[in-house]
Amino acid sequence: DAMVIQNPRYQVTQFGKPVTLSCSQTLNHNVMYWYQQKSSQAPKLLFHYYDKDFNNEADTPDNFQSRRPNTSFCFLDIRSPGLGDAAMYLCATSSLDRGREETQYFGPGTRLLVL
Amino acid sequence: SQQGEEDPQALSIQEGENATMNCSYKTSINNLQWYRQNSGRGLVHLILIRSNEREKHSGRLRVTLDTSKKSSSLLITASRAADTASYFCATPVAGTYKYIFGTGTRLKVLA
Image (cartoon, rainbow over all chains, first blue to last red; front, side, top):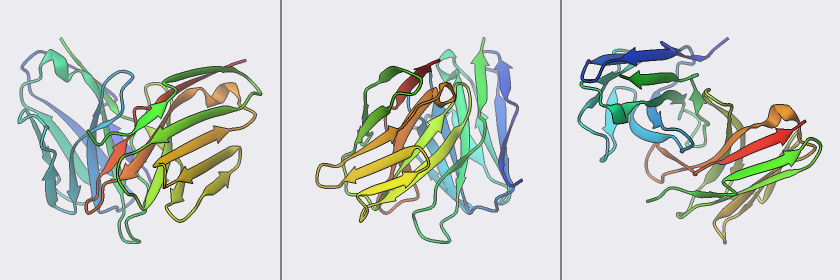
């Protein structure tokens, strides 16, 4: 089945130790998103790609970087995780081929714990 | 902030009752979407309503949209324990590929 896959599902890292979260999709969607979601809050957009065109949110900390080497894969790099970066990280995709009304398809998320 | 507001923040009902949650947004939109999120999981798309539609149904879900009031409601009829989840509305940001999510309603359905 076509889907959005995130690995790992749970990630434990140490304060200041770089960590990479991965997302892959079999939907062949041209847009990929990374969201941060803290407990009982709405997902907060960090950045998104339209194909290889990278779009950063103004309030996304420099500590967060992203790579999209091809259509299927997207990575979130946190260069020096702080305690405040502990959250659920959600990857999502959408296709704009049929206009701007396409829904987003979400992966199961990666829960990051910073010790 | 462009974030939409949802109310109530939390809702607890008995199985079989109806659940209504509301979403208000701030800018003009061409569609509004509702998503469900089970605890510790990703979001799942439920229904999309276009700006020229006033009401839409999907199974036990009924969504209304009032563009003059910039608000939408999601009604879940005959709720089940499996409907326990958080529900978010989302609206696209004009001229971008981005979406803004509402603050969410946490629904608990008691068996």
